[in-house]
Amino acid sequence: MTTIDLITAAGPSSDGFLNELAGSIHEQHVPAGWSVRWLVICDGPDAAANAARARLADELGAHRTWSNHDRYWAGASRNRALAHSDAEWIQAVDADDVLCPGAVVAWVREARTQSTWCSFRAVDWYPVDGRTPEFPSPFSPGPITAGEWLRHYERTGRHPVHPLAILWPRALLLRVGGWAAAPSAEDAAVAFLGTSLCDGWAADDVVIRYRKHPAQDTHGGRDRPVESVADDARLLAVRRAQLWLHEGA
Image 1 (cartoon, rainbow, N blue to C red):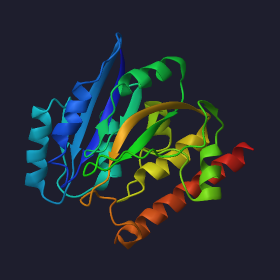
Image 2 (cartoon, one colour):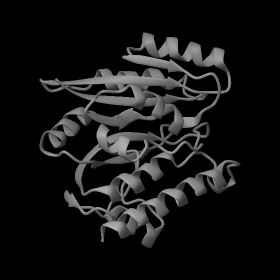
Image 3 (cartoon, helix red, strand yellow):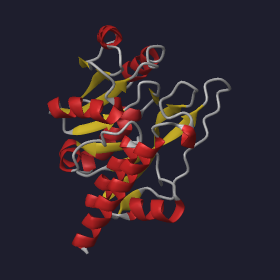
Image 4 (spheres, one colour):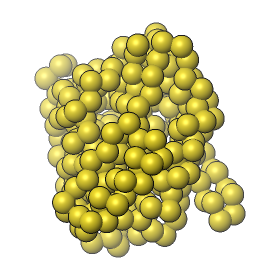
């Protein structure tokens, strides 16, 4: 049995969304010979609220839950689950997002033929008016050379694919040290590093609807008080990735 672990860091604003995420996971078709486990880390400054959120996740069918005693933020929280995972493949899923129909089938299709990271597509999702604009990508389906992701970012200031929409081999995530332990940009940092360490693969399937709403942790852009820390996490990851690419030249 080959396993994909879905890792979710559930922060203080996630209580109203976990049920919808759980429903989108339970509705997935899982091909024979594969299993999908949902690992939930409940994160926030209130330990009692985290414990209550963990009980909710248990009721919603999480395979395993953890409850933080303080706010660790998404990167450090996901790393707690990664430390205990023995799955072959890892996919991060935010607590306020949902999986698109057919997401697991798409992951399995690519994972059966690839042994490296694989990027998929996500759409921004505005539930108030139902808009789902696509996150544009310059990648055509097929191979991606190591460092191409970083070079695109350096040219344009944008990621070529939503950095959350990457299916990772667990071994590669461990090699890059997991997600950045920062209050934001944890997905950006691991994307720079993992996609620079080895070649990857692009698929055209839309697998995640990325909910846009005022309560999300990343809402507020440059005015967020934690944005300077996020910038530093990106910069550190970019410099590490550049070093690896130079050494491999």
